[in-house]
Length: 400
Image (cartoon, rainbow, N blue to C red; front, side):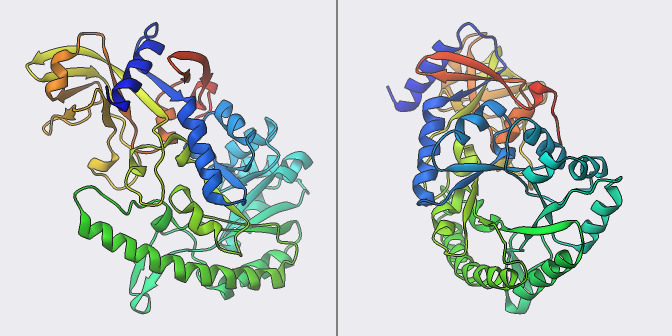
């Protein structure tokens, strides 16, 4: 029996009393992945990216472990909710236009002390001031640096379109704007190198592309390390009380941690290890989060149909955004139908051994987005479900 077959047997036994669709987290894999992130961070604290977890029980579990500190949130409403729930260090990773949220933040000393907001434009400061509605609390501000690699005099850009602040001078100029504006304080810098941390460099069957990605990422790491250090020096000259410099992501933890200028690492997907993180030379994680769909039809030899399963991940549309039929091994999508909204045909010889009501286990392409489909996660230890915990959705919190 292969390791994957053994996992399937465990998961089937653990959930035999539960009807699919359902989602699980294998706690042994989850904890092993957390340990690996800490090892790669080499002593620098890891701030957990909540969008990749979306379950408070599992956020609490990982924050209780040595090596993790603080949460990186994805909306202001989520940030305030987490802070009110007891998380005392929340970094909002994206600028917000939530005026009601800013009114709440600036009127509550506890929230203002716990939540740091992201900006990259003076207009965002004006929006916050206009939303204060009498709130006088000082807003903690983090400045986001554009990490993109620019080649050929800027004619070629590699990396996500996020912040407009690329040079040390541009980031320092915004720090000066914040320093001159009452009610705000620069406490951090963030730089997310998604083209390094979020792009696999060992794609099966594509050796030339994989080599090109590795060369690009090596060049991007060198350029960013030098520029990030210069940015930190420039901002510290304006804001000597700078508390943190955040960088990285699951795929670049050890590389980002090696930079002296970086004080903490952001990571979250590496806890669940969805299928997009299978193609990395920098680490090997264990799939921890899976979902099961029930077999509801047997339309012919070498084919079964499961209920639902059409859960594409965000990003540029493509086959890599689809969930992966994972267990039993050897199933594949019908190319004419793919993953369906209400039903999904699956082909392959393992289909002939599946009966009506059996479970087929899938891995989602991205981490926390799985939790937007399920109200609860069943936590598996060995071959037992030892707890069932709500996702954000299960707590009525659908932030995006």
